[in-house]
Image (cartoon, rainbow, N blue to C red; front, side, top):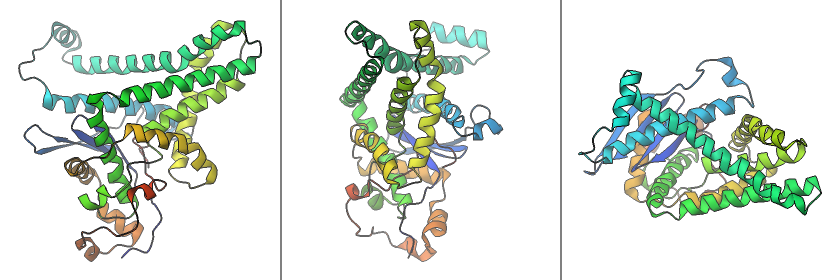
Length: 347
């Protein structure tokens, strides 16, 4: 049996969708959906993203911007795909759909998907970047210290973010999606902890990992507070423009931090990662075995986990005949040994 016990990054990441899970390994991704009849449908495809193969996508603090955008686009695509299994069969093409398809030569769905993705980014900027600034501006009459105003703006930004996360987690329709989110995390954790991929081992694994999208979003908020504190301009209009202009910088820094978090057990990294991991207790829920089966199907479609365990944990073929997980503690004890996120294509 394996001698290496520490966590090893597998290079795969994922995303929960309606009644299913997407798993991505480099350019390959698989979407596994539990269909209404109970069967699991697995679709495998390739997504290379913007500027594929270009050197700019390898530059630290720059690559994060492109990977973040790619994750949004792919995420929107697979969400629409998963929803198609549960659409009303009597649903008809709308007038807008017909008009877009006519103008674009049948590419109306892609145009709409791009529009929705861009709109989502705009709403996020308005909610988490601009709104805290405008709310903090009301304190300018009473607070003359610029540093204190920057701290107030940061505090408001954190409160808005927390209210958003808590509000979303309380929605009944989101609860099941978060259970699939937990299954995704548990599945990758199982592999990266050196366990054979089966339902028992996955169910015993942690549903928390450092490089989850929730942790990335918290880091975006955290990094923005620091940058806006030290980088200031006096003109109100320039302040707004500066906040928008710094968004790619913020995303790039947050991405590098979360990459480091997945590869390091440094004490400082653990401290930085702790708030995002705590928030994951809201954005992930414990899955049932049927959800775990979907996650396993998605992984196995794009990732050779047996070869991975042989290479990183000294497994032999005979070891895979053992189906029972090792007695090494509860899932909660594994929360510090965590996995990769769908933002990182390289792992």
